[in-house]
Image 1: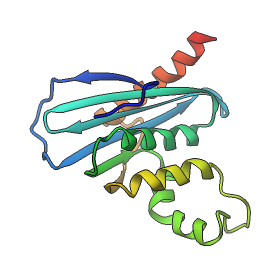
Image 2: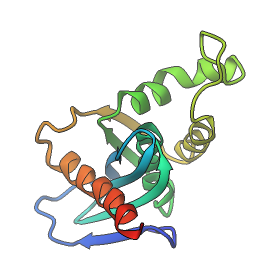
Image 3: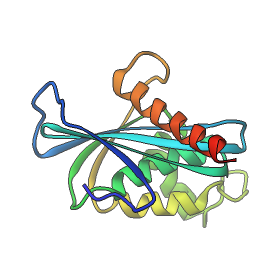
Length: 167
């Protein structure tokens, strides 16, 4: 998998079960200390017998921006078009990409209340990277003990900590 130069990666080769070699599983999460405030994002990617963890941070952001960034960075890290299942605990991300996006675009990136869609810059990037892959979106309940979601959350919180430690 290709990672951006400014992203951090931890590779864990201790895979416990054989996965479908044609499908990538992606678990993402975002975190923010204050909203807005310092934020972080994290993703766990699983393909065949390998797992990759990526994470990053921003100094002044929102939780929704970090949720979107986690999905974007995970999909951007893939070297070639793949079939993927992306798990998120953000209904904002899942509903936005699967339901709201076509309507926003038809309204020239305006909401039903005729206000500008928030985070339009990230929604446009997400749409572009999603178009390169065959992505199924799945929502998981956050902070409910889902192992990979908890790992993604820990990576996102690591991003927040990295920002705080650098101040």
